[in-house]
Length: 334
Length: 136
Image (cartoon, rainbow over all chains, first blue to last red; front, side, top):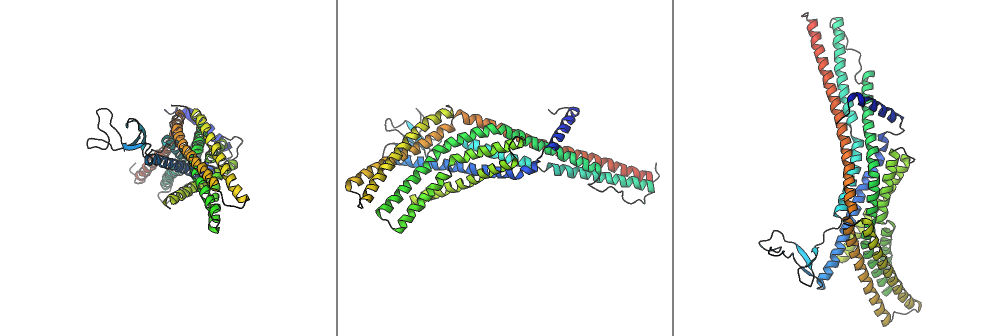
């Protein structure tokens, strides 16, 4: 429940004074927060891309075990007395891999589910968070509220004109109360604007401060998962580099030399733009943003620079991961 | 559920072993290729057989690395840490949504103030008309 009005106003006044003393307004953060939101969205795509690639590669491994007759691919067997999947009385038709032993012990559902279900939700929440920071920053309430106050001032102008008419017997000029620019109106607008600014600024401060340890820890988890997940495209690339080298050694034509150099270059791009680095940069960028909003020893310029580094990394990694996927799919089709 | 740190520690150990073996194989293959290059000759049948064997082992290692990647990602995804962080992030987002709602409230109050001022002005105007007509 809201505090009592007589208690709320002194607090609001204190907030306004504090805000007036602050060097930055929320508008100064617009670009940084926009960039952070865009980069977070890209990081979300990178994680999703890794999730897809890990699942795809794992499915290929499972397919090989099926072809080698190491496991049996079949419909999910029913528990005692229940229908199996994929018969007329079933409610589902799902496939599973079963061991050779009893033919019923399920090793894995097929096709495999992407492993990062909950981490994708977590990354999605971070993405929503960045979007919420933007929404708070962009809320045009101050403008709307000011417009309403100005409308009220318009009515006051009518009142003043009427009063003048009364005094002059109806021949008065319209009262000289410039719409939207009376000292009272300006003051009211200023107070509303400043109060809204305070709500926005404090909202950003609280949210970034609360999110700081969470994003830091989440980023560390994403780093870990990216370390293992990125081994999958690395294994694919190592294999492709080996193939290209062997082809070049066996037949050193210009085409084979170029192909070897090209595939090595692609692998190099992936290794340079290491997926785990992206999430480390995400945490650093957010830390700097939060610290800058708290007025700690991080300037907005430093925060912006870290956000830009994160954005550049995210942009590059998403491109590389997509290129790699296209490359491996092309290789399989060829 | 297990803690992420525990899952990571176990998986990292396995990963390190695979990476080390993969590098060893790579160096052995490179040594075979270099020997033929140095002597300015084609690889011998023995060397080719050894190389093929090494490459088969390397393929197997890559397969193990893919399995490790998938399984570790699944395990990390199911760790307690993810649930806890998800909950905390949802709380932060709820706070931000509250702030936005508060801003909307300010907007509503400003509208009410405007309506009140408007009503006063209209009443005063009417009153003035009545006065001017001499009814009062």
